[in-house]
Length: 232
Image 1 (cartoon, rainbow, N blue to C red):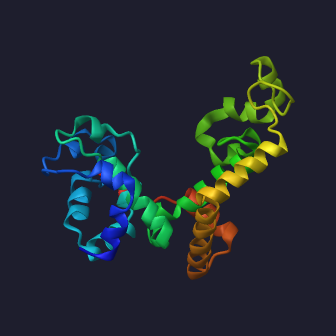
Image 2: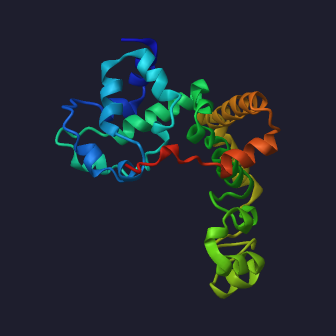
């Protein structure tokens, strides 16, 4: 067994999700992601179970660990109560920690996702916040949603929201003291360090690709090659 395997075994999700895999393939048969992507959770679990560091490193640098939707259908159907989805979460965590995520197209999408989601949480107190949603980035939402982005205050008022208001209600303004507490939680739990780690490795990859951080952000947010999909 190798160092990477040992690091994975320290993650409680591997302890909970990898017990006695018998390689039956039920997880792959039930997996929604496997229907569309070149993705086989059975093979991933088998690779981890072998403890070969070279093969685990390939996984950590690959696209495949980012295909999982974490629906946990695998756990509900596994006859041995394994959770390949939990193993995937541990692989993603280690990939982010070591900077290997930047070596794959899907992994690089961790940068815009982290920037958007954590930015919304720390600045506004919400995972998704209307002011940071650009319709131009999501044209598939259609013209109705475009209209709503141009009439937030009216739309939320008619639906009983308290958009940027004081007191209770949906999308109310979160007091600064609560936002400061959120930041403290991020600091204490290591989330701030994780954000900085993702930023560091993403910046290095952007330089390697000859892009500014704005260009890199846009590229990772929009670009998706067709190599990922199961078209066979």
